[in-house]
Image 1 (cartoon, helix red, strand yellow):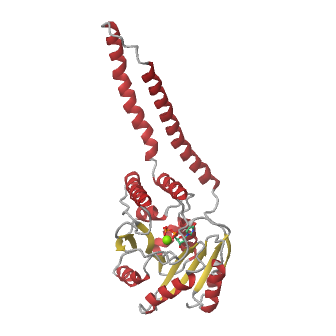
Image 2 (spheres, helix red, strand yellow; image 1 turned 135 degrees about the vertical axis):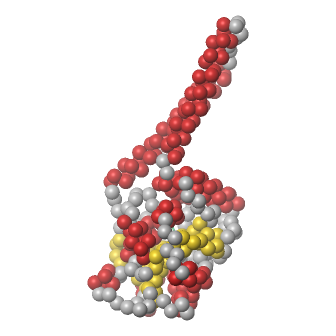
Image 3 (cartoon, helix red, strand yellow; image 1 turned 180 degrees about the vertical axis):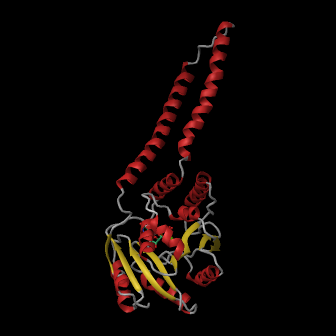
Length: 319
Ligand code: UDP
Ligand code: MG
């Protein structure tokens, strides 16, 4: 029996890319001899994305959609797709054609040789972004690699293949802050990464603003590690030790007749510095507390308004 692939594609305002991505992927997969289905997740688009997907699903019977009730973000859209995908392997790919579909046969080859996860990373900094976002992107991967004790390649992408058994494990993970790239490293299994050269976005604009990216980066780091909390202990320890040496120094200076009490300005500076430091550390603790608060509410990661995938569960069809 032929193996089945589920292609999971998150789409947020991608009305003009839907048709093209279906063509590109079909072209790349037709020669491979696998059965495949498309699962588009409409992540609260404001444009005609959903209608475009529905149009395609009328045309081809291997195209399905999951319409989310609002914009939940790419990671949650991907999770929605993976949760409902039934293929022997699940491939996630962006809708904007920045991920080369021509890499699919190679990914499948690796899968056939026994790799359970085949991920991809940019072979060089993204040439379609400005220097500032390139630097912050490199910094983000560095920090998250340090705090999570995992090496995340610079430019790691969400274009990847996971085996069904990996997907079954992913389905069980129900975290409030879900950061796919980190989660995939954490989950283990035999993995291999292949480099790719990103193409320009076909049409439309990137959905993530700088502010959204910073929020995402902080959230991802916190979702993966409690190390920022240890920062407080470390900084506290260093400054307590410094103070410990400073006090005898003042006393000795005083008894030796030196003027140790001058320097009010430096005193104020020190007080301000420590005030700031304490607030920063409180902020870090507060952020974790917030995450715990949100997690304990146990709300779903996403809400599905409608989908045409359910039919498969009731009435299995060959696609
Ligand atoms: N996307 C999504 N929800 C969002 C933002 C983006 O589903 O809130 C999708 C988007 O349609 C695209 C993919 O995620 O298929 C990558 O988005 P984008 O091109 O904006 O990100 P970048 O290429 O800059 O990583
Ligand atoms: Mg893109």
